[in-house]
Amino acid sequence: MRTNRTTITLISGGQTGVDQGALEAALLQGVAAGGFCPENRCDEHGFIPERYATHLHPVERGGNLARTILNVAQADGTILFYWQDIHGGTADTLRACLDYRKPFLPVDASTINQSVAAASVLAFILRHSILILNVAGPRISHWAEGFGFTRDVMTQVFRNLETSSQP
Image 1 (cartoon, rainbow, N blue to C red):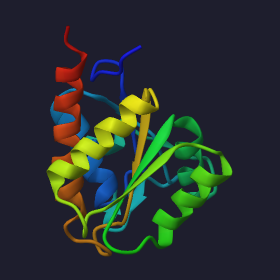
Image 2 (cartoon, rainbow, N blue to C red):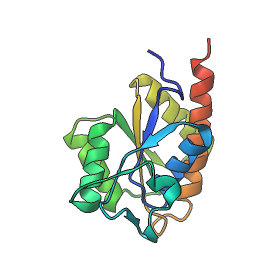
Image 3 (cartoon, one colour):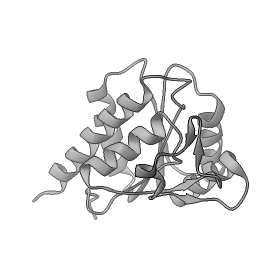
Image 4 (tube, rainbow, N blue to C red):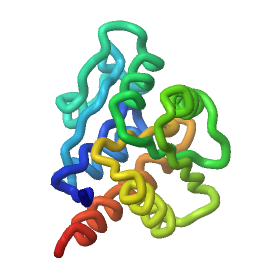
């Protein structure tokens, strides 16, 4: 079965930066979006904007780590966008991928441009027949360009998925 934008679902935790960049791309491209967020629906700036929060399910308890684990467990695979080093919540996501034996693709934006990143993500999705894709990475205070980089890469990915699924 080929994956396309009508069958893929993007999930993310709702934090500022990479998470919200991925959700923005999904919403702009008409891709189903969801995932788990902290029980209080908070991000580092306060509450997750309603535009994203309406697609997310709050965890009952456990905060950011519980949210991370649930998103990894629910997904067929995870993309980890980051700049130079994996740390904090992104490292928690990587550990969860390893613990759950889920495929993951680390994308170090300090070493590749958006087009190469998009091609790598698309190949990962197709290779692993991903239908539920988790996207994670640093919050905006740890990587200011993470929102824009992720939004732009994932927008290219969703457009290319549509093209690759046409007869």
